[in-house]
Amino acid sequence: MPRLAGQIDPAKTEAILDAAAMVFGERGLSASMDLVARRAGVSKQTVYNRYGSKAELMRAIVDRRVAEITAPLLVPGAQEHPEEALAAFGRVMIEAVMKPRGTSMLRMTVQSAIDLPDLARAFYEAGPVTSRRRLARFLEFETAAGRMAVDDPGLAAEFFAGMVIGVHQIAHLLGVGRDLEAGEIDRIACEAARRFMKAYAS
Image 1: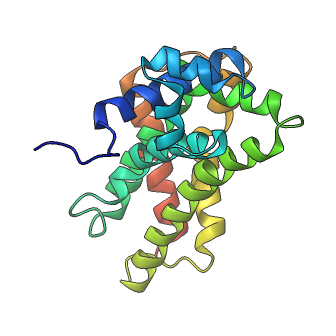
Image 2: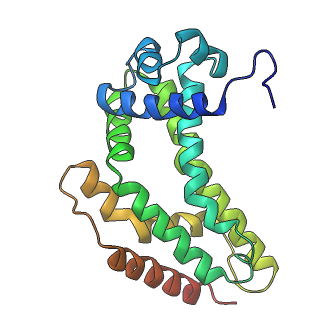
């Protein structure tokens, strides 16, 4: 089916997001949109047609990452099996903080935060805030269904994220973290989910 005038090829959209993540991770948030466009193999105008500003582009990059992280909470059957869903969510979180591209982009965002606060805020609101909010909604549903008893879903979501990624994220930001084998990631995520469910048992 041909695209309508003004529509952007989905493949170009992905290329822009991939290129921007690499460029911002390598050069920091002050990197030009021209460089993003060249890396993506598109025109600068194409980038601006799809994302009106650098902050919108930043949000789109992080939105895509958050969608991947929170996907286990949305798959069919997740709500009926909260411990398994939380373990799957935890696994993806750990894997995400160990990915070199994600780590380098977060590191550059932290370094640029003082000079570019609007971009840092876009990263924070689209990333950690949104992922915790989605987890909190999941916990609210589980509490309403009687499978859990969570009196403060927002705080509980922060607790779970801290249990899972805490030291691993810091270590990788500092460049001293080690990659974990799949079995170790699974053990950490499952143990966190088990203890979390026990703490918030209905």
